[in-house]
Image 1: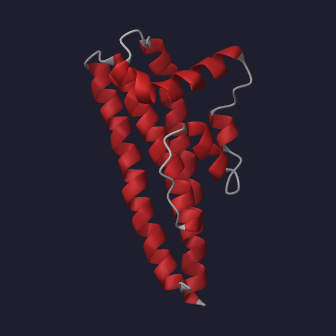
Image 2 (image 1 turned 30 degrees about the vertical axis):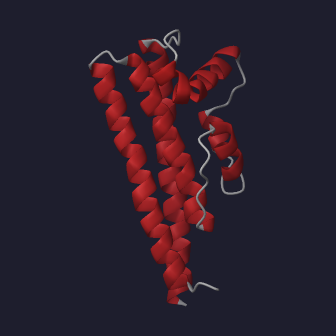
Image 3 (image 1 turned 135 degrees about the vertical axis):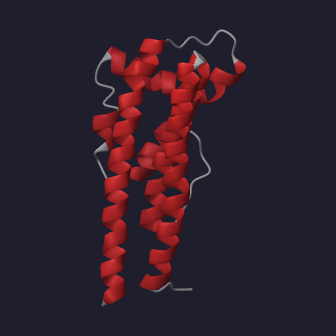
Length: 154
């Protein structure tokens, strides 16, 4: 069935509020774990924040949510709506690649691999990236919601 812009707008706003706010909570959890010197937990929460922000974008743009946890998969699904994510995770140096791989691996390994190593300096390097991802997601999702509002007024 075809949705009208009023329905699209309502769904996009609800999806955005739920998913984006989940990402913001995970950033808060990252900070709490970091303060408690639970660095592995910090890395897991940064992954969860990244995942939540990346899932917000297709939810707002196409009202579709991917069940996938793999960050590379989610970034690919966001490319039709923004290319700015390349700024967040450029992966153009060994260090950038290492940090991205660490963030990806944190989803499973921070919880289940006793040999997984992540340092405070890794969290210090990744946190601003995830905050930049948050800011880009916030801006582009709000721009798309504004377009729906505009269409709804017509």
